[in-house]
Image (cartoon, rainbow, N blue to C red; front, side, top):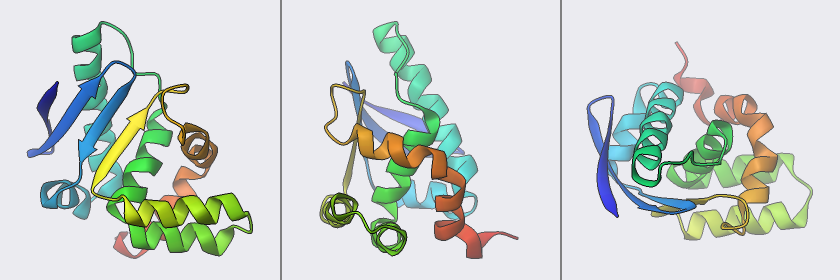
Length: 141
């Protein structure tokens, strides 16, 4: 089911399936993340999770940090991939970073067992603040 999710007055198109969501990257999503990316992302995730709960009567079992990192990776694909590659000497991470750049227009987020890349995002989730600093450090006031 495709629906509109509102966060900070911006409307983002999201498709819901059991065990997965799909966020359609757009100029509106970029505007949502422009002024305060962390707050915009957190509100979007909270509203997505509320709608998922309403639709399926169960929680979406992906951490907010994992979802944040995945959203940022797609919206800021070039910056994210270069930042990750700068800190990584692991070949698989470099390959996934390159894949992100090529598939940045749709953000597919699935629960463990329903998303072949969940391990990657879950692995980066503990580094959410460091990633935010890499991506948004210059935006801080």
